Image 1 (cartoon, rainbow, N blue to C red):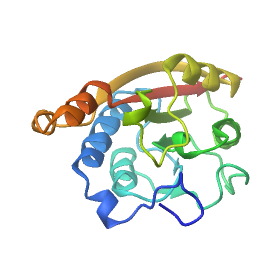
Image 2 (image 1 turned 30 degrees about the vertical axis):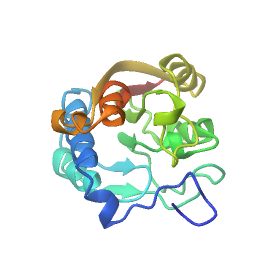
Image 3 (image 1 turned 90 degrees about the vertical axis):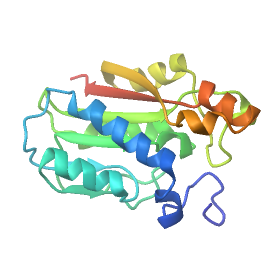
Image 4 (image 1 turned 180 degrees about the horizontal axis):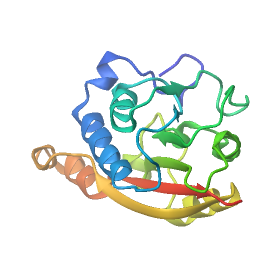
Length: 193
C-alpha cells in the first residue's frame, strides 16, 4: 500500500506477477475484444491508472498507443489533451473515495462519437471478511448500476467472471470461499448524449 493512502495499491513487479491478475487481464481483454463498437485500429486509447501489462495487451488489440493517468483520481481532473474513442478503467473505482468524480471525468474524455466506449471492471461485492484491505468499497450490482447511470452512461453489455484457478480453491476454507465470492464485474458503457 502507498504510505498515507491505505486504499491505493502499489503496481509493482510483485503485484503484476500474481496469477489472478494475469487471469483478470486475459478475461477482461476477451470481453473487450468481443465488442464490435470500435473500429480497429483505434485512433487512441486511455487506460485509467498506472501502466500495467494489461495496458500493453490493450495496445496490441486496438493497434494504438494507450495513455495512462498520473493524477489523484478522487480530486483532480483528468489531464487529457485529446478525446478518446476507447477508455478502460480496470480495477480502479474500488480504490477511490469518490468514483463518481472519475466517471464524470471519463465521460468528458470520451470522443462524442456514439461508438466510443468505456470498459469498466471492479470486484463484485463479497462479505466483509473476504474484501481486500486495499479497497475502499466493493459495490453490489445494484449500486454499481446506479453509479454508472448517475455518471451518464448506459450499459451496453456486462459480464461477471472468476479469477482463481480450481487448484487455488482446494487450499482450504478461505480459498474455497474466495472461489465462490471473488468475481469481477465488467461493463461496456456508452455515454448518454
